[in-house]
Image 1 (cartoon, rainbow, N blue to C red):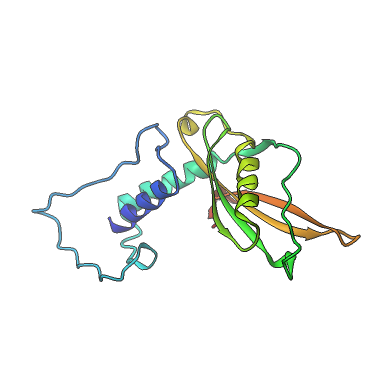
Image 2 (image 1 turned 120 degrees about the horizontal axis):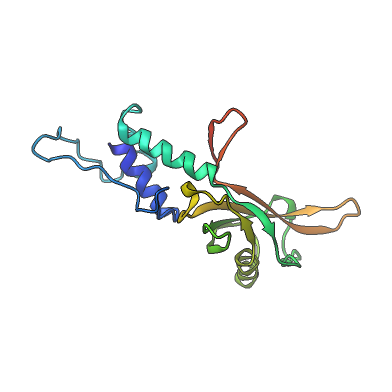
Length: 191
């Protein structure tokens, strides 16, 4: 039960607001009179180190099914605005070691509904805003099936500087889905 609740909270925090059938992710509740007492969480506990619970419970199976649905609905880049914004590197010692990580939420119509900077080791706030504006104008192809309708999926964008053969630095953006399936059909979750 606890793992499923934490996963639902994590999915909601990540912007996944709809289950595959278009409803909010379902939470199962138990009758407090028949439920086993739960130990109190320590005051410094966080969801990251909370106990995960029984992996065979129906709630964890529902959560895994929802994650697999998200993986099956992964968006693919269809078009992007040109040109890519540039970041001033004059005050940066090692541009190749710098990263800006973005979270990009994509609606079932392929448009970006939300974009945020998760981490940044270089760039000014105005340059970060230019990068977010760029991400906002990306367009994705999303599978058009019943499972993907009314579902937002998360794409992770990583901006970094790369040096060309002639020694010039250029901003590059790598995009990848948070949830995907490998060749064997195993669920992959990337951060």
